[in-house]
Structures are given as structure tokens and as C-alpha cells.
Amino acid sequence: MNNIQIKKLSMCFGNMFALEKVSLNIDTNGIHTIIGPNGAGKSTLLKLISGHLIPSSGSIYLDSKEITNLPIYTRAKLGISCTYQHTNLFDDMTTIENIKIALQQQYDIGYKITQNKLSKLLILDQATQILRRFNLDDYMCQNTNTLSYGHQKILEIAISFATKPLVLLLDEPTSGISLTNTKEMINLIKQISKTTRVILVEHDMDVIFNLADTITVLNHGKIIGQGTPSEIQKNPTIQSYYLGHYDNIIT
Amino acid sequence: MNLKQHSIEKNILSNKIILLSISITIMLVLPTVSNNYIISLLIEILIFSIFAMSLDILIGYTGLPSLGHSAFFGLGSYIIAFLNSTNAIALNVSQNILITLPIVILATGIMSFVIGIIAIRAKGIYFLMITLAFAQMLYSISIRWSSVTGGSDGITGILRPNLVIGSWMLQFDSRISFYYLVVAIFFITIILLNQIVNSPFGNTLQGIKSNQQRMLSLGYNVNWYKTASFVISGVVAGISGMLLAQFYWFTSPENIYWTMSGQALIMVVLGGNATLIGPIIGATLMRLLPNVTSSITIYWQSYMGLILIAVVLYARNGIVGTISKIISKNHE
Image (tube, rainbow over all chains, first blue to last red; front, side, top):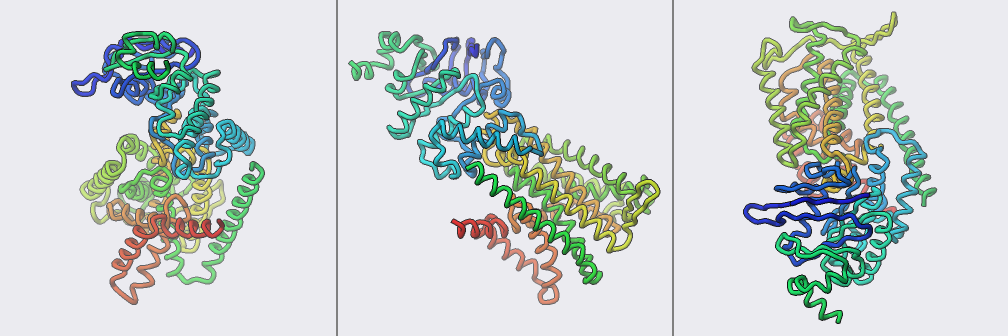
């Protein structure tokens, strides 16, 4: 369940192909990582799955239901949640308010003009639990624009997690954050992947090989390899394209 | 943490109830110690406060800067003129507010829905231009279609309402009785809007104002919520327009003209957006200032301009927003 199937997906910006006839089946449990050099089309692929971009051609399926042309909010309701490369929070709200607004949607009460005390307390309690799980409970009442970048990135994932997604799309969650935050982030993603399918775009090879169960390698908008981390490391084509340096580092 | 937050919320609620009770008492007692001039001024202030609060829902809570809000204000005033006036074009449906008010709500609701679903597709300055264009379109119709709207002369003889329940009837003919009706509608509006902005729906609107993209990726149908906010805002503006027309026994295209939207915008900015109480203070200042200063200077609008420049430059949260910021800083 929670399979993502991509068929001959192309995305054209003017005359340039960001993705060209990409077909991919993400049906194994755990963390699926998409890697590739800059401009390979990784973030474009993620945006096409989340609905931030509509493809030029091809189709996307979630559990055999076509979602290619569905708007972002409908995909989110179906269980596809995403985080952004650069943080995208409710800056004028506190950390807990950011989580509460996600929970409000999760409980489908965002349209209500009344809320009983029990429901208020339930959401407050859940939000507190989520912040505790993501080690953000010390910053509960702090405005998000006063948090460190690393904590903002973690909060970004916590907000998505609050919507109980089936598929979580993470776009470079560790970019620009400290080593301590990176370690924390890796643990959190590992925990989340036990219950949620995670599709991860990442540059950091240590993070990739620490987290990935399966890897897809993109280059110039095309898939040049797929497999487990050890298969990818042994693939000579990929090494020549992309991984040569890393291979040298780890051997 | 939960208990602390719970007790803070409880305190805020009890403070609000106390403030509301004091305000209602003052409003009820005021006519007994005031003359006709002051009562008229109070009626105007209350009506424009309702109008400004309606715009605050759109600007302050949803982040949609409209310059066409007069469309609904004017529409409310014309609908009541068609429903009940001594004019030949009037349908004379009923004078009973229990019949006319729902019709005004329904008509302005439909109109704001139609304009809303088109306008909310634009953002920022483009939204402002679309709303302005719609309002100017209605203004043009009100001027040109004189056989129905009375043209630039407007419609006179709009009757003040009564309240009929079975054989029991209450007339709002006199200034004082109409004042009490406006006070009642004013407080009902405050209570309802306060409930809306502090509800999950209100949180959703504030989320849209803060980060529309994030709301979409959380699964919120942003356009639906923006349209709902537009309709609520339009309906409340329509009610205020209806009250003004009944108070003056008159409506004219001036009520739809963009300067009326501009006045409401100034009231919201001056008093403080996203506060509800701010627009009331803004409306009070805007109605009081010309009356107080006109005997001293004829340049009151210039002074108003200077005050507005100062607020925009140095107190962007408006009077209420700035005061509450200072208070919360002192508490820290």
C-alpha cells in the first residue's frame, strides 16, 4: 500500500526538459532516496508528486489512483505531504500554533466556527506530544522566526508529520543545518519511516547511505540507475557519473 | 503547560465578558444624558464600526486587501431602498426587520459570493484592483440606470424598520429607538465576528494570511476559505449599508464610490488590523475628528493625512496593535 507509480513523466520549462519520460515505481517499504547532481530534476520530481507542478506529459498514481492533475490540497488530503528545500512555516505564529493548524486539518475542523473544550484540549495535547517527539517542546511558545534554522527544518517535518501522511516527501531536509541537528534529523526520519513511506531528495552522501533503503539516481532529467545503496555503489555507470568521489572517500 | 494555557484563556474570556458588559451598559445609558446631535454621531460611529470590522475580516484576518468593499455597503443600502421606501420604484415588501434583514443578508451574500469566487483568484495588488473594478462597475450602474437607482440623486424616503412578532410590534422610527437597534446589531456583530476569528475557521483564515502555500500543502482548500471570508465580510458590510440608508432615509451612488472603501481601509489601518476592536477605534476617530476639529480648522483632512502617515511609518499595527505590543513587552 501507499505505492507511488510514475509513468513516462516529463516536465518541460520552455525548450528545456527538467525531466524526460521518467518511469518509477516506489512500492518497497522504508526510505526511497532520489539523488543526482545539481539540475538533475530531483526537486522537480518531488514537486510533480506533491502537486506544486503539473507535468507536461505522463502520469502519477497513488495506490493505482491517478493524481497527475489533482491540486496540491487534494493530494495532501489523500495522504501526500511535503516539506520544502527552504523552510516554509507560519512565521508570525508560535511553534505550537504551527502544529495546531496542521492538526486542525487532520481532524477536519478547519471550517468550524465553534470548538468545544474537549476538542481544544485534545488538539493542544496532541500538539504538545508531537513537539516533544521532535524535541521542540522547549520552544513551544516561541515564534518560529526566532528558532534556529535547524529547528525550523525539524519543525517543518513535524508539521507534515502532524497530518499523518501516507507518503512524506522531504526535499533536502539536512541542507544548511548543523551536524548535531543533522544527526537528530536522521534519527527522526528513521522513526517516521517505520509508519510512513518516505521519499527523500538529498545531497549529503553520509545522510543518503545512512537512511536509504532504495535509491534512484537521476541525471539530466533521466534515470540512470536504481537499487539498494550497495547496488548503487557498485554500479560503474553511476560511479562514473556521480559517485566516484564518494566511493573514493569511503574506501 | 495545558493548565496554564487553560487558565490564561479563561482569564481572557472573563475580561472580554466584563469589557462587553461595561460597553453595553454605557451604550444603553448614553442617550439619557446626550442630545440629538450626539446620538446621531453615535449612530454613525456604530454603523461605520460595523463596516470597518467587516473589512478587517478580509484584510486583517485573511490578508486580502480590498478597495472595493463599498460595493457591498452600497448594495445593502440600495436593497433596503428597493424593499421598503416611499419611492415609486420600491417593492414595499415589508417594514419588518425580521423579513428585510434576511433578504439583505441573502442578496449581499449572493453578490459577494459571485464577486468573491472571481476576485480571490488574484493576489495582493491584483486582488485590490479587481475588487476596485467591481465596485466601480456597480457605481457606474447606480449612476447610469437612473430609472431603477435614481441616478446620481439616489433614492430617498427609505423607511426605518419595525419589529413585528405576531401581534406585538416595536417601531424604530425615532432617533433613540433606532439608536438602540443599531447598538443591538453592533454588539451581535462583535460577538459573532469575535466567535468567528477565535474559532478553527478563524485560525484557518490567519494561516492563509500567514502562508497560503503551506496551507495548500496541509490539505486546506484555500480558495474555498477565502470565498467564505469574502462572503462573511460582504454580508456584514451590506448590513451596515442598510442601517446607514435607514438612518439617513436616503442612499446614493456615493455609498458605492471607491472613497467609501478608502474610508473603511483608513479606519482599519488606523485602528489596527486583525484586532476587531481596532477598526472600531479607527471608525470613531474618523467620524469624530471632522466634528471636533471643524470649528477650529478647515484642514482636518490634512491633519488626518498626517496622522495616517505617522501610523503607517511608525505604528504599522495601528493604534490597538501598537498599544498591545507595548503592553506585552512590558509584561515580559
